[in-house]
Image (cartoon, rainbow, N blue to C red; front, side, top):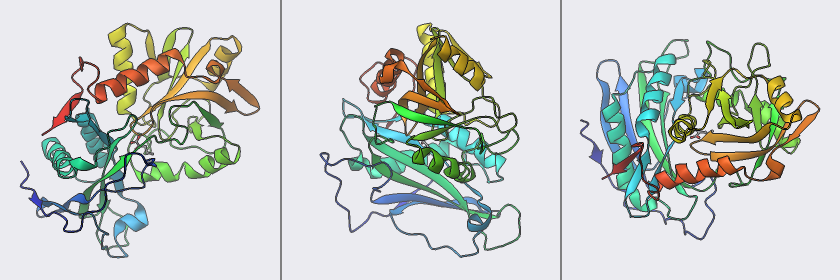
Length: 356
Ligand code: COI
């Protein structure tokens, strides 16, 4: 159990008005959680302090070799007034897998959860109430040794910041258009693709620019070796409904194991809907489309929740999905996941954790 020191701000910021749109990732609450690490002391000095800039040596290793990890989860104001987290242990487990992959010391799961609970409790008043809004929780760790040689750092900072958010995409729940990228790749097996680290996201930016120029919101990545098998969208995992079966790429080592991805798979099993995690090629998707069997496409992610797709562009081929509308199952997944998160639907799978 951490002994967390709490220093409250003497200069609180105004909490955004519920009638103003909450643009994703632009507003930050009054406080942040910070904990330091060095090889002698381990993780030490856990504290909640006023939200403030960091002071770091310009030679801090994070700036040069990108040794950093992050997570994303959300706190919700439930209809009965409780504050709920959604499957935080899945994020914490994944955070420590990322840490192991990029040589950052792990954090005991119960300490990680306590840190999240504590900072959310301190800034609980910032959790928005409106439909489609939540408090986005962004834990991250950075390497802070002032050193220019390449090796894992001996010192780190673990920080959690909070941001009240609305929908990730400006489209909201409206279906998005996706560009299938066959020039650039995001990750390869054995690389960092399954870790939640900034390197994967910077690798995606060039293709994302290309997609935006073509009028597409996101990039769907193909595998880095054959450029043939579907991987993920970068800010979300991808699902297809083909002839009544829900299909998603099997975790291959280069795909992020999303918490919402796992939740959709669990819901399919719970409801008795056929679901397959398998290696799936873009040719199979195009063939299903041509035969009229590609019934729905949607992305899943903490930020994106369930994001229906209305168009896929692959080379010269344009695939129009569900007549441009939200597919029936996509809507059902959205309603169920958000219903559980907001305490509107009975949490039969035991996914929510109350912040007390
Ligand atoms: C999340 O869904 O939480 C993510 O981390 C994706 C991020 C690119 C916003």
